[in-house]
Picture 1 (tube, rainbow, N blue to C red):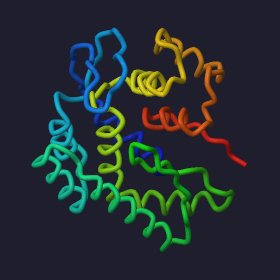
Picture 2 (picture 1 turned 135 degrees about the vertical axis):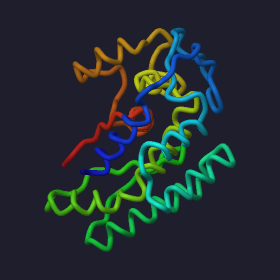
Picture 3 (picture 1 turned 60 degrees about the horizontal axis):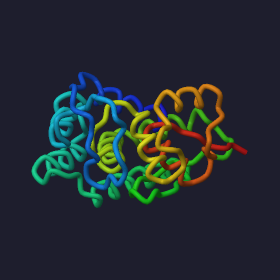
Length: 209
């Protein structure tokens, strides 16, 4: 299982059993109006999401300590996320791989495409090195990019793209679905700002080669 797949798997588990909520009002860091629809949330609070991760995802001992600290403070410490990232990078280096990354303004690391090589060995190393980092990485992405805990990643993407002035105010999740299917967006999905918004919502767009 690659890191991207592992992140998606953890995200899917955290999304399971989401609860209905009111149309989001913006939350910490939100600077634009929320979409005017009733949205579902993945949890009632970030600490509730952390508890769910503890109860259902069987975190490694080091991740369990990080999540328990988040339960106490109400937030996942960026230093714990940085430590998890360093563990992953060092683990991969020990296996002969040096994954390239870009860091978003929200403090999230985006793993960029590798040069062609032995993909089987890389995927094996990736799976091993993600074992005690992927839950913390997933929770931190939710905390930083989705403070309202929206269960619909399309809403997360649309809100970010709107905040960055990359789409009009009337651009909807249906528009996003249509444009994704046609691979024809009203913005450059490979440009860094748009690419960050899409990645933070769980969509990966990269040019390879």
